[in-house]
Image: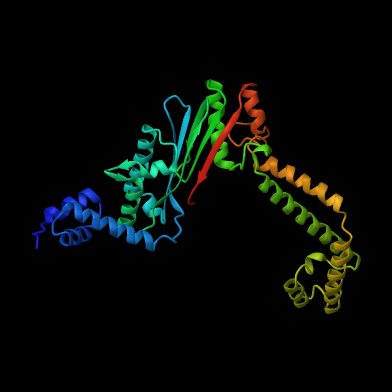
Length: 335
């Protein structure tokens, strides 16, 4: 049996960052062979990773940076299970070093990033090692690259939100506009540049929601109108719980409660059978337009740097009539 010294254990601990007891056990099992001990520790991390695979990794760190000439932006998301690990020096330093190496090597895909070498092993293996060390699931859920004539990066305080935004031309006005728009994207979370950039399935889903909501509102208005005519406050009978509670309080009588239940059932059925489908579609289309204005970057009221009334599209054109936002990426993790 190899003679394992405290110095040996400490050396392996310094190289791997794993606890003293685990390092000692690995060295004993490897009979003092450092390479075998590292493999043992790595396998331990794989076992922990397998056990934690179904755990939620909702905390972590997001970083966005641009290259020197501001024509390319890189965004890295590293996730863990707790904010305690996410704010730890090792996790923070590792995330920063991975992104810096990826930028230096101009890595463009998540697959290539995971295969990139860091500290003598791939990023994927390093994540497994860190999982074994911390006992938490640690992974890289996303890595994005954005290219444009001018790119701005913004990291919100705490590194739980980051944005990259691309403009069609560089310059002083572009830099100012891009900065304000990047802050706006972080705050307002638009789903797309404008309505043309929203996938058709998303539009169809929003329209269907608008149609259903409009139908329910029309039926409810008919029911409320009938209740008012009967001298019953709709707010007092909007659910069985309210009906029973308000009878106990003396706000409605038992007779009114029964009358309300009958009106609600009969009027709802009658109204549903006589809805104006053309009107419903028109109202639903209006809701869809409202969704575009509230959810797409171009039509949202600028949250940063504006007057509180001007939308992002008009703000950009005011800065420079030929200036335009061509793409953006926003990611969020944790609280």
